[in-house]
Image (cartoon, rainbow, N blue to C red):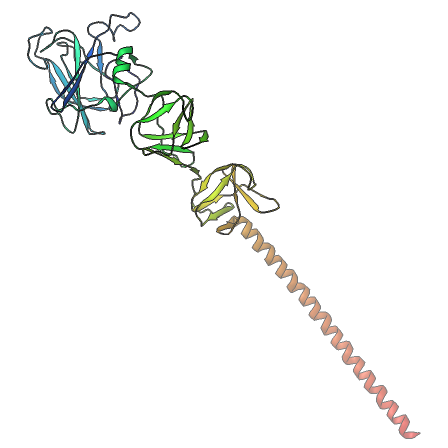
Length: 375
């Protein structure tokens, strides 16, 4: 079993890669891969009949096993054709050792599964693998130039002259799933170099198409992103920089939430406009764990980072807080009503007292008028 790359990426079908011949005749392209001396540390992958491995996830569509394992000068000799539907390609392994197949027509294979052994059948001058790769469904002698499409992993051993003459691509970085919560580089084309250092660092391989999470950035003509121990450029014809963003959640009245209604709201590491920008918050709802303010803004903490409470951000308190606030308001209203009733009662008592006083004053006034009349 090899070291799988990705189902959509082709890997070399032999563990030790040595190109012994190449073909480029009227658009038909192929390579011959020779065998290596026996190595006791890898007995199944060296010697005259090393194992051959599926280059990607696929289906076995043809097998021929009728030729002796000695040259009979009959074309491909024994061979196997595997189609890779996920990438729309196929591979042909020819001159295979008779009766060495590990699979049958119709079998599904995974990348790195052994399928047969190298041999010397057909039109052959010595043990080797004749390898063709093409697009769509298998066409005899329909191979294309696949060198830019096939990658070596740390599991592979590459002949020094082969590396020099054919520029074998090494996969030193593995793509990950797209994740908008992480800073990532999206590689959507071929030939993006992986370097030991940014700017003019030594090339150690190529990045296959996919997404790569990065931890640091260096800027010059390009934006260089650190992925693991290596660097790739993020603003080229085949790559783009994707800033991290939070993942919105569903609206939930049981928790405190911030509703973001604007684009490009920055996510910061600390509650300050001077703090490092971690990404951007898409429109949606975010749970608020904490609030803090500085001299400029109120900040809302969500997902371990901070967003500013600015125009376009709406704060929604959790429902139980709202219910509690309503109950408190009800209690206040009831209290005010009770106080109002007391005041009304007191006013009524005062009204009665005023009426009594008015009667007393009226009586005194009548007495005074009577006395004055008599005088």
